Length: 412
Image (tube, rainbow, N blue to C red; front, side, top):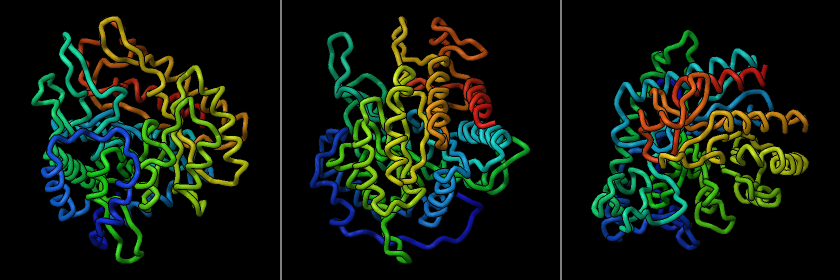
């Protein structure tokens, strides 16, 4: 996203090209109770304007190519799961400003450009480890993000509602409007403001993503218009699955999460499917191994993929592999574990002589108490003071800035 400019338009897609993924198994999709209602909503989404434009996604791909070549750094971060109530001007500005401060710290240390990509304006759905949540013997569908259902533990709130997909679109549009304004007028809250800011989210709900996929009349290529960069999660990266099929057909930069069970053969297969032309900037691998596994699992992946000649961006997600349940029942993460995985990621790349492309964080600009540790020392007993996340625990602003400063020292 850059300062406002005229953009070429998209054309709508035929049903066949937009929904080829339907022929394959699709993991983590909601059990919509009314298929006819879902169809009506997706038809409405097809007629709405795109949220982002092809030249913006193309520009991000160019920026990520520089990261793949070792000439820049990627900073990607934001909410675990955005909520419809989280689109106030203050909340969006705080996230934007925090990313700006973190980017400035990294750029100063590395003396290299920082590509800033928010987990924002689209992160309204989440994969879950089980389909049901049970409380006091009562089973209900698990919360899958505001684009699908609500957090309240009632049958009505937890029933997937396709009308929420439209709300996700409009909430994303509101957030993008604010972000474009901040980018245009340098409102990042620091002396150093970049005039580029890109958005990303997990391409999870395929009915939504395909309804917002368009053809660029200039190039003839297909683009997801819901965000500049889309990623495929650890639970949905099956090579023969619907998510990889969908991602293979669009020209946006694509990320793929790689957990501790991922092998080099898995990653090479993903490269063949998602980046057959081996174009730097097209594919980002986001490792989320956990502090205990990153030093053992990551080296083989990086070494063999580098030897293959593919130029991918390597990014560390030190959040998802380090989650545990506190005695209070809150899901949380230790700052020390997050830091340890981050350090291990840099050690692996230093030992192999490869470029540690950047970091991918779940954080908020608010003073929450969801992750323990850090200089301020949030304790397990303090988790209940302000635990606002709708899903997974996030670093608060101070913790995120502290981690960014440590990452900056690695680059320095």
